[in-house]
Amino acid sequence: MLSIQTPSTSNPQKYTPNLLPARIHHDGPINDPQRYWTPEKDEDGTLHAYFRGRHLHGTSLALPANYTGAVLNITDKQLPPEPQRSHREQSRDAGEEEDDEEEEEIEEVDVRIAERIGEFEEVVVWGHGGRVDEGEDVYVRGVREWIGFAEAVHAEEDEEGEEVGRREGKGE
Image: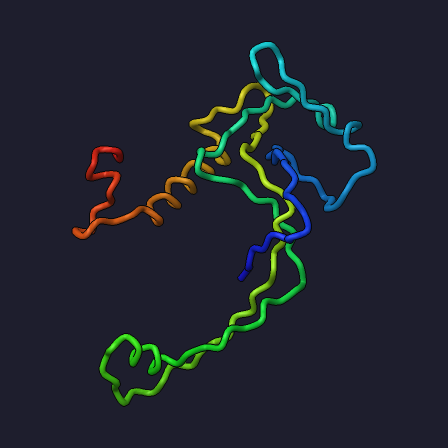
């Protein structure tokens, strides 16, 4: 598990992640990024770049207004474990009757700290041989499906169990 923390000493830098149709066997900084990566916009607003001699076309995919992307640096630091309460203590606090069943073993979970070093508001998806088909591209579909799933999981429910937005006609 990860615990995302923002260092108090720094302001997150603005980034634009790029999803490339390539497999690169390198992880780390490069000396001269402009030598390898110089995307340009044409008069239509389409992004173009050449990577290893291949012409790529970019499609900018903006995150919804109420979302912020985070660029994380996963550290080796561990979050101190919280004192765990037994199932019996939780039941007692909830007003449930105790039973004589054996208590469940509480498994401790290691939680590593991920530092938030940057943020983004859009992602650029690159493709070969023309603009990325937003209806067919797996990355574009994946981002849109994830946002839809996240909104469904976090949707407010009214007393009858219906999602508030759907009942008011804002949903499907």
